[in-house]
Image (cartoon, rainbow, N blue to C red; front, side, top):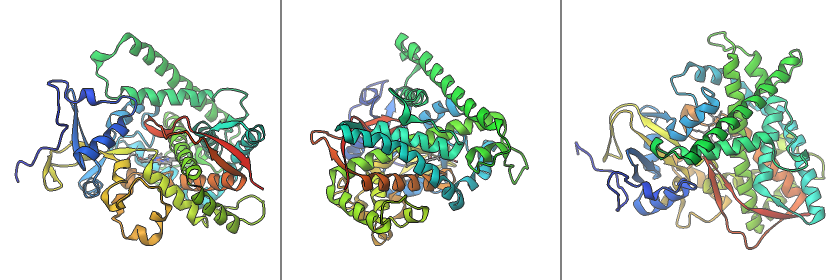
Length: 461
Ligand code: HEM
């Protein structure tokens, strides 16, 4: 039909304010999951004058993932992150020349050969974590899982990407100041991306001042990391920072400019940390709750890596069951819970909904990953959903935890290698004992993490 149909909306709407009262500022994604369960694979929220179309059905997602008609859009939260990372890879507009340039320069940093290089750093950082977990096991103390996976992921991206050991586990008390500042920045962006200027309060202004101070601290840490490297220009590190500082763009022959280098380092410290940390924490949650899955994963690890020597690079790729555990974790709780798409020209989505050129939608991944194509019990954790024949039987766009198209995740292989390796090291070494009273509480700060999830550890044999 020429005029199209209206996108479904909540049944009750306030004049002027629209669906403002339905906003859950702390957990917008989980609110949208409930709305999608109620309103269907596409719905619209209206918050005063801002309209947000949320898409989560597999056919509609396949359509908005089509690069010929749609493209990445930054969306309000990512636009807000430009105050931190400007034209870094993740927050760059599609049209910014520095996006394509940085892609060309940094792509070799994610090849198989590069990953092989990072493997050793990953193992060293994991040793700092097991040192800390061994002590907790001995004392019978509980560990805060998301806090520790965040320490690990920061140490890994710091050391593998930038030759900088944050030493997060060596700190006597408290969090790394960078992690502290970063997590406040992300929570602030999450909380305020739907705010209207008129609703900004005195409290809001105080939070804004803290926000600016946090961004300044992050930039100082990054500038230190870069300055440290510039002091020994002759040593070859073969990591991301070397590419950023010394590699020329094959197309223009130019280096990245110094301001862009800072934006990229900040980008990777955030993107390489938060999502991987959340994924590892959710995976440990599922493994602790499903002892039969943990046992199958341990049997695989003991078969692939006999004895107690370190796990070799090639062995990680052989841990197929553990990889399915990670895949299934990313299905139920994709740590980056969605992405924005905007339409290149007037179109009709699903043959029904008119989308004028420039309009945009949010792809809600945790709900896409519970689409009816996943079967009758989509909330059940079952790694066998990722057996090759099961994957082949599903539409490709039913699973998009790393995004889609040219703006999808550059760090995907890095993250998967890190996650499988970390889980292998931890499962090999510890029995995981969850607190039986814990109920999963998913914290949202742009990315998702299990909050308040603690484990008691017992050293294995
Ligand atoms: C982009 C997810 C780990 C670096 C993205 C996007 C998603 C995503 C969904 C697309 C965002 C959009 O369309 O707006 C994840 C998940 C991870 C992970 C779930 C872990 C399990 C990493 C790691 C790194 C990284 C380890 C770096 C080492 C990036 C960068 C982009 C990106 C730089 C922007 C790429 C571009 O637009 O050119 N990621 N990511 N990510 N990710 Fe990841």
